[in-house]
Image (cartoon, rainbow, N blue to C red; front, side, top):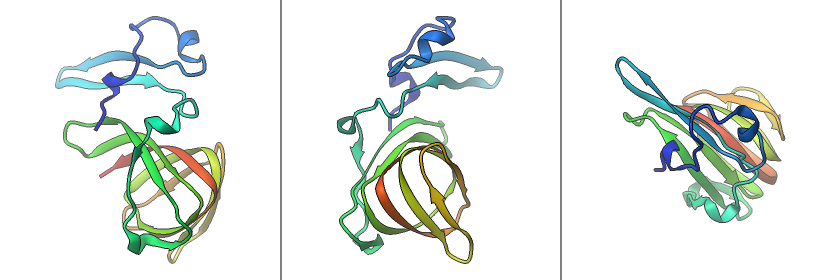
Length: 153
């Protein structure tokens, strides 16, 4: 898994304006008395090319219809593996999943997420979504969906 320090980093104090430029990344080290905390960073998610994402094969039993392809990139993982931040993308199709505790923001694309025994979520660019651990979902991906996520295990 890729750590945030593997991203193109700027030196601390280089200025927020630089980090806001398309494709720019910024990182600064933050330390606590208990040890190093995760680095702060900004990354232009749409600017990360598809060929920079890694294949994440679906279990065939998850595919309901179509031929969806999943790719992603872990940007940071806590030392104990219980916190993960990254990018995830899926092409059109219908898949099922059992969720972890996750907060994500849709960067591009559209999908309908049906939570078993719960709501039907229509998500698109700019939408923030929270899924609970154990939620059983069915994702109908209408347009290739890319999201930035934080998962707590």
